[in-house]
Amino acid sequence: MQRRTLLQGSAALIAAPALLRHALAADAPRFALGIASGQPHASGVVLWTMLTGAGLPERVPVSWELAHDEAFTRIAARGEETAELAWAHSVHAEPTGLEPARWYWYRFSALGQQSMVGRTRTAPAADAPVTTFNFAITSCQRWDAGHYAAWKHVAAEELDAVMFLGDYIYEYASSAKSIRPLEGGHVRTLSAYRARYATHKSDPALQAAHAVAPWLLVWDDHEVGNDYANLQGQELEPDFRLQRAAAYRAYWEHMPFPKAARPVDADMRITSRLDWGRLARIHLIDDRQYRDVQVCPKPGRGGSNTVALKDCPAFLDTRRTLLGAEQERWLAEGWDATRPWNLLAQQTLMARFSWTDPADGGGTYWTDGWDGYPAARRRLLDVVAQRRLGGVVVLGGDVHSHYVADLKLDYDDAQAGVIATEFCGSSITSLGMAQARVDAARAFNPHIRYGRSDQRGYMRFALDAKQLRAQIRVVDNALDPSSGISTSARFAVEAGRPGAVPL
Ligand SMILES: [Fe+2]
Image 1: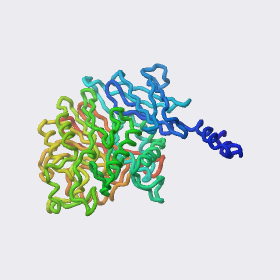
Image 2: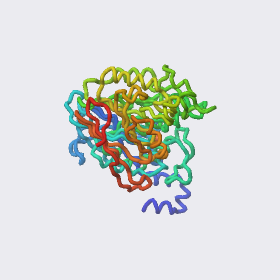
Image 3: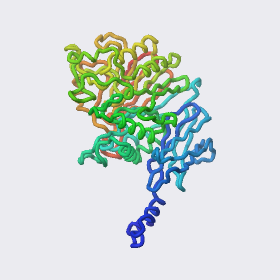
Image 4: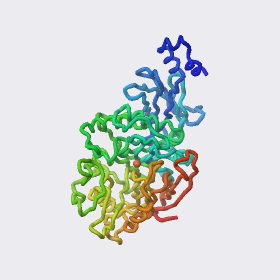
């Protein structure tokens, strides 16, 4: 009411624009982008928010509270952070000394306002005999391709953690025909990346999903630009390093990563590892920042292509890496044979997926995914096989299809053993390819047990020492913000016996 009166305006206020700005700022929502928590470990978790609205001072004190109960009667920790203009007034609070395997509630206050309340939890102690881990994998939430009904349903699942496996934003300009067109053109600058995150994070369903559980996050390409590889953009932009630095900065500002992960220039480490008690070791890896560029690109361009193996011998160059030598070694040395499960949270489909019959010249592959780096995939799975790790589950996103697959050392040998199990989640909203194309290709990709490109949603997992159970959760209509959800398929994996079995 006050704002309306002001906006309807008197001559006195129009004559005093500074006063008007001040009056508007006083009632601007300061926590309009919600809250989040992430990177849980046994004694702490990162709590995130960001101050919004006009007229923020350069440095603003923000206090936070973490409690054992939703009413905040039993405070477990509290503290103060400074939200700085230089980092988009983001807040990354890092309470320490918390109890393992506990649920907590948290909130922020600043400038006379309080944020919404979020729920989060710590991981179990690494040596604790944990019985269950409930989580979802999610990815690819293109704003202008649909509404976030899937997030509403993620928020209603009882989850210990939400894994987000990449494409939190898309850098593209919207078509005017989009269901919810984005402002601004193609994103390349810090201010444009920040604006894109602000739009996404304004969505109440996404905010609700952040508020129910800690997230484990990795990025994919669209947080920077389509199909980028290391320091090469798809358009071979000469200033791509600057673009990557701006993109990584905006990513850190808007995500619940610790201060130690704050990017320096164009580098930000997201690779990390987490033990969920004695039950599982979770590895979060980055296949974008350190990779070799894609083989056999289209003339004059970087990025992906879909190419026949016989036309592109570079596919088979054994020196090529998707993770970078250092991260590849870190992963190889970090597999854990003492726990029943190793979960590998990464960006894209790992199983071979040929678009033509491999019997005819070796097949045809999309060069941006693991298929573009077959020697690197083979090295990774060789370690899994040699270490006799029976409970490796690879989790991915990126391809806008629900895939369940057997991972093998040799896909041309129908008798070759299954080394690990793969679940690649579809998208929250981003559109997939025609189902008929996937169906046709499955005829010569028999290790792909399930493939649906026409469904939007996420995968929900229940893990215990004996079994992983997976539900493929699918929204009825991603164009409807109040869409219902159903389970389109169920699979189980027995510990020590790789390969998903339909339930
Ligand atoms: Fe995507």
